[in-house]
Image (spheres, rainbow, N blue to C red):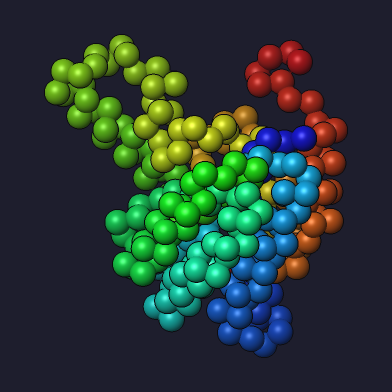
Length: 231
Ligand code: FPP
């Protein structure tokens, strides 16, 4: 069983378009899919789920769509806290919190605080997240530490570097799922996905079900992971 599943929740816009609905309706349906998948992960016994909800590049979208996504995020955190807390889900956010609107930041912080004691499923939401930015930020912190004499350049090992990423206690994803037919990583968890198995599907995210998750997990179980060795 994969310990950590990461998902790029793609295809909301196309799902809405096909129904003649505004893109925001696709994102709302995407939140429903997220609810289903969180429940399914819990049932399967997956310990970590990380989902890409808003990238540092998504600000390029029309203001109306950005606003809709931010409102959905606030709504999700506020509405789900009780359910997630009761189900033992720990929720947290990775990304540049300082660049998020105040209400999103506050709702995310509260959700994280109120579920901090849970550990059955660790749900991490990437919001205003970019993999390169995360790596840059770690490099900047390490450069400062070297500059101030706290450490030497030789002390910077892979483990030390990884300890400066947003959520160093979370293991690297074992399985990355991307629906909607796109086959790219799109700046998601670049460092962490070095040896992650990828699973693609043409289903659009709002149509993603527990069955699709099970299929991905079944495929994963049949793969042989070698991590550069001979297995
Ligand atoms: C990509 O689909 C999806 C996003 C940019 C947003 C994903 C967000 C959610 C599912 C809701 C937010 C949830 C929380 C909990 C904050 P797209 O719009 O790029 O789809 P397209 O490629 O078909 O246009």
